[in-house]
Amino acid sequence: MQKPLPQPLRVVQLENKSGCLYMELNGEPKSPRHIDLYLTVSFKEDWESFLGGQVKFGLKSAKLKLKLTNGVMPYESRKLTGSRQLLIHTDRQNREVNKSQNSQDFDAALSEIKAKAKANGTGEQKADMMNKFGVTAYQVTTQGEPENPSWTFTKERSQPVLIGVSYREKLGTLYVTKKPCIVTGFFEVSKKDVLLRDIQGVGLEDINSNKRVVLNIMITQWLIDAKLTPYLSQAVLLYD
Image (tube, rainbow, N blue to C red):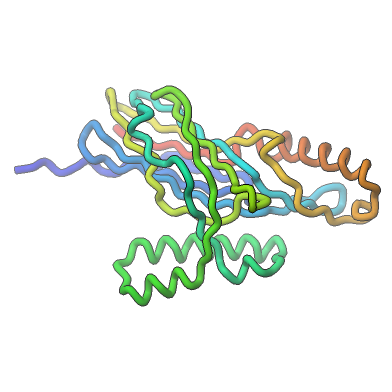
């Protein structure tokens, strides 16, 4: 009699610190020593209060890093690479939204995508879902040693920032060397990855172009220091 497969990895920590990026990381054993890792991620523009006003920003790129304890993921076992697609509400592509509505849009998108993916819907149901969502493209490259693999997510040239939802993309297969095996995944960005999209507040809209450049640099550095480091999102999985 075939032994049942081990249970999925336990999520012992999940922290999403910024509204511009949301992550979930899941692991499903395919054998006692082989685990498939799956990533759910959503990107969006977010607002932050600044000097009595507020600033809107998004990410041009972001890097997912894994720290593997008692496990390895060789380059050849990584699956998430190349050109990929993010789902986005079609009505959102043609309108501006405020901070609250922006968050509601993506919460709703992620919830609906999850529900549809888990259900064995009919062809009409699947077509209906795709009618509600458009797609935006992005690029993924992978680097790093087997114990510390990483993936860089980069917008296409035609897009100002990363926008949309990707549900349960397979990162690759993890090879367990011994137990307990711990997977720590986190997204990080640097100043070059952040793009300011809007500045609202008394006296901030009417400054000249030179001062605007300086202000943008200051705000971007403030976002990095105060809101986006040491990581945007982090998940810790345990296999014991």
